[in-house]
Amino acid sequence: MTDRIFEIGQAGLESTDQRVKKLMDNMVNAEVPGYKKSDVVVRGFPLELEAATQRLSSVKPQVEGSFYSNIAGALIKTDSKLDLALGSEGYFVLEGPWGEGYTRDGRFRLDKDGRLLSVSGNFPVLGQGGPIVVTPGAEVEFGPNGEVKVDKVVVDHIRVVQPERPEALEPLSGSIFKKKDPRAVMLEVENPRVIQGYVEASNVNVVDQMMEMIYLERIYNINAKIISTRDAELSRAMELGRPTQ
Image 1 (cartoon, rainbow, N blue to C red):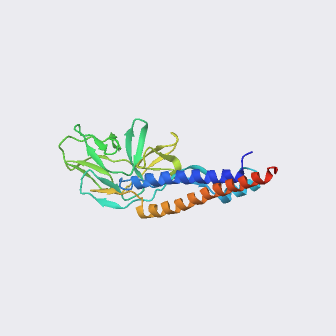
Image 2: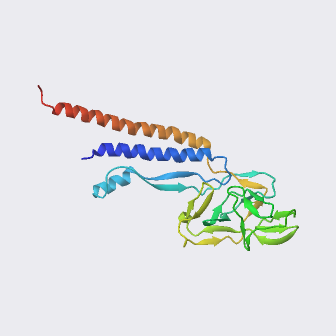
Image 3: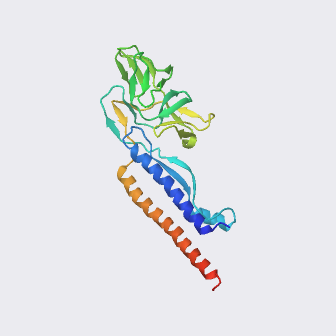
């Protein structure tokens, strides 16, 4: 028969380990433009305790998935005409082998054929008319509402979309997302605020992450102590239960 205290301690160690892994991902990608801070979703002890009183589950924390923060990062000036940031809600749209991708990482470049590509992954950037392509060597500008201007002439509008439900997207990386369900609805942002010459920084605060690391270390040590204390108690109980010679 499994000891319930051991289960709780083990579940605590496992959930803390998952949180530390997410925290390390955040810190590694803290300098990646458009990266969104992630954390694990843990079914907390109070909820499990309530469920246990109704004989629905054991009393232990459960990792249920990941959560990505949609809070916008700070804007960083680059002065590059192909770098774009969004001062409004929404995502730029990329064309990937899986279908459409969505990102707030506005670092773009032109290849030799004049295709506008994302720096991260080299995916084509989509406009209202499909992949954006400009004449090689032409002057390219982007208007505040997403107009794509080639030699001062508007040739397209860069697409900016917003999911009908925030939870409809899942990450391919911390800065590129795709639909969880192909049937999910993406709404076109009619009047986006596109800012040329800037990129959006990651929304990860490194100081906060360091403080979280200290907190998680303490939680890990507490769960390890639960297991070691329970092990010592069971060992003493077994010794008491043995017949004397």
